[in-house]
Image (cartoon, rainbow, N blue to C red; front, side, top):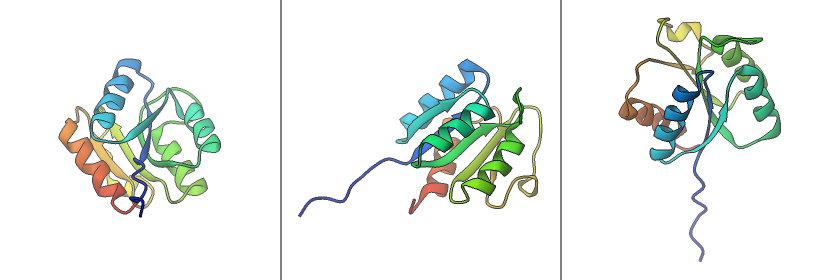
Length: 126
C-alpha cells in the first residue's frame, strides 16, 4: 500500500517590496509550505486564475496598484471562498472584522514562529 500523498499547502505571498517578499517567502518555505510570489494584487489575481492549488493568500495591505491588500482579500473571498487569508501591515492596525470572514491579521514586524503558527492553524486539514 502506497503512503498517502504528502503535498505541501501552497501559499501565495503578495508583497510589493521585493526584499520583504523574498524574506516572507523564505520563512514560509522553511515552515514547510510551497510558495508562489506576486508583487501586487493584479499579479495575485493572475496567479489565482491560473492555479487551483493555492491554499492561503499572505498579503501586505498597503500596496500600489488597482487594489490594496484589503480589497484583494475581499476579491479572494468572493471568487475563491476556500482560500484562507492572512493580511499584514506595519502601519495599519486592522481588526479581524475589517477582513473577510475567517481572515487573519498579522502586524509587521512578524516573527517566523508567528507566521508558521498561523499558517499551520489555517491549513490543518487543508
